[in-house]
Length: 191
Image (cartoon, rainbow, N blue to C red; front, side, top):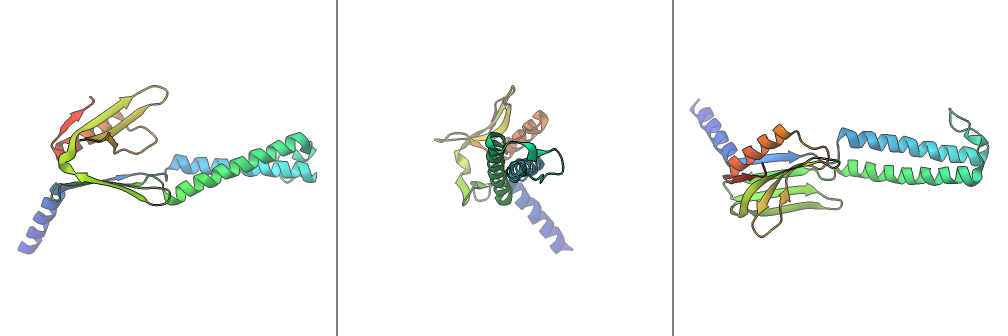
């Protein structure tokens, strides 16, 4: 009984000394849907081009065999190839889960570790926790909205901690920024 209590106290103390945040990479539902749509569209254009060249309908809808191969079928073939190359790129991004990683703040070791998955190798940045000057919130609305949390580090530019893509809701951004600033014992900027 005493050993269980001691283990739970040790786990709570370790949790108070360590904060780890996971970052979502390319494997988001929107990216998966986009890869599927581009794959289907590219295949459709390529089949329409082939139908035009062969004079037989390879698609269940429409009548692409009645198209003249030069220039309509040829252009549709180029569109199909371009779309399938884009789809291949999207599927590769999903397979390697580009941008996924973690933010690890370890008070016991006094180290901040930011790690992400890159194209060919993992990307990692490690620096002393004493170099962190502040936690910065950036909110920009408009056509290209941006809502992100970043670390203001001595002698370096700001290091972004949030994922790329859909902006975080404002209340979640403030809550996560305040929690991180409180954990690190630094100021929260940008509100």
